[in-house]
Image (tube, rainbow, N blue to C red; front, side):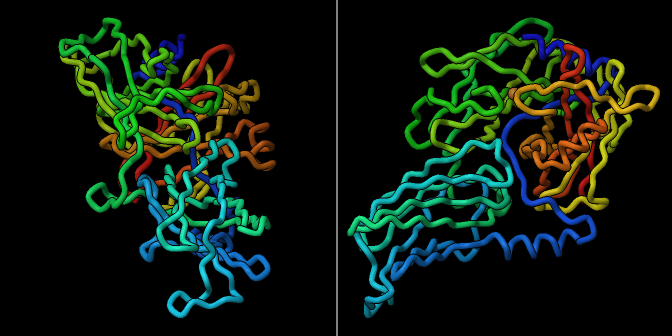
Length: 413
Ligand SMILES: [Cu+2]
């Protein structure tokens, strides 16, 4: 497909830097009142959204959240306890109930486009204790819907709401990432300017098995994003999968050097995962674009559209949801109103931290106000910046038969 071409031409039209896109998963919460400070808002929303204990007649179920909280990017085995409040155990308090059947589904209510997760639930050794294996792709508010069937046949629906913190540094992480992205047989003597068949596999990190069953998210099972190490060149592609789970796509790299390779996938029954790998293109010319990251919110032009990034928070908070609006105008200043949906959304945005190891999933907002704003050429995305630094943001829109990509650089302090 010619998205690469579109993206590359957008890059060259910019004369240098960057470009774009974004896809699937991401972050969000209730719209924030514009007159509240971020800190106040976060405080309020956390109080509203955290629910870890639910009563149902004489029964109770409690999710046992670790004291330090729940972190994104780590697979964890949380426990929940089902008890009968009318019967006491001398040690545990309420008597634990064994033999409860449990099913669950995990969603991010503020982000309807994100795939749901069907967690494994198992019984622990002690009656009344159950384990639930969870993985949250990024920080934010999540909902865990449990459908419990008690030993007497009574149904007990329980809805937990948890606030997930951003990923902690790798050396602090307690849980592993459940999946990894492997590059298969990348040529050692790869040359810029020549087509290379890029092959990829998603592997279960516990079993080493190649995953071949994926959910469709934003119309595709695999969103492949590749950026040069300096983040100045970027493409968003959709490879094809062979029966053995190997994904492949022909690609032509523009220059020698290192490239970050991101796979945005949702294995069947699991949440979205943004997996990071890299390739090195050994031969060929050096980049002919500006390789330094210089903060800019635009305006930037691509084929008849002038785009500006307008963060709604004047001081973008770290570790909280924030709204980024991209304003599209014609060269004479009129709103651009003839973009069309692409991959199931009005636009896409992907944001990469300098160094390439942190990717901010960004997602179009989906509330009525956002829909109304889009009719004025202003497209709103939810983003979340887990740490300070420079970030490259790529916004992509489908316009007049072409994917147009706009690059911005944010300095988050
Ligand atoms: Cu995609």
